[in-house]
Length: 91
Image (tube, rainbow, N blue to C red; front, side, top):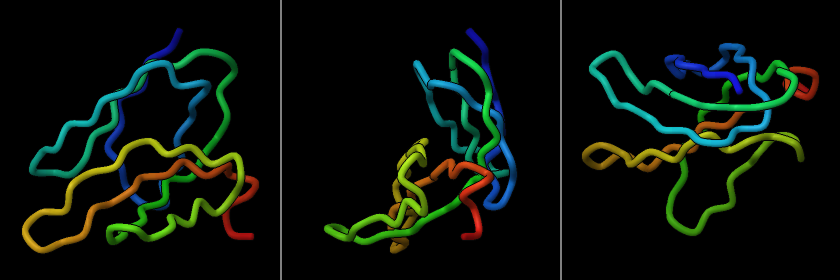
């Protein structure tokens, strides 16, 4: 098993395998993903998707992973953080 602790920034590349457990911390600097994963790592690009209740989320590619969904602050809409396979990003 492997661990990852990384601040989520749209467009950054992250290496992950099969996520077994994950959590998110909100800090003044942003959102931090803490994950335990297994298997061979693959490169993913982090994508941030804001959405409203009932909307479909564009996952960009079929094998994208939803890492976390965070509440919007104040009047802001919730955000879904996705890990999109690097080879599928930008198609």
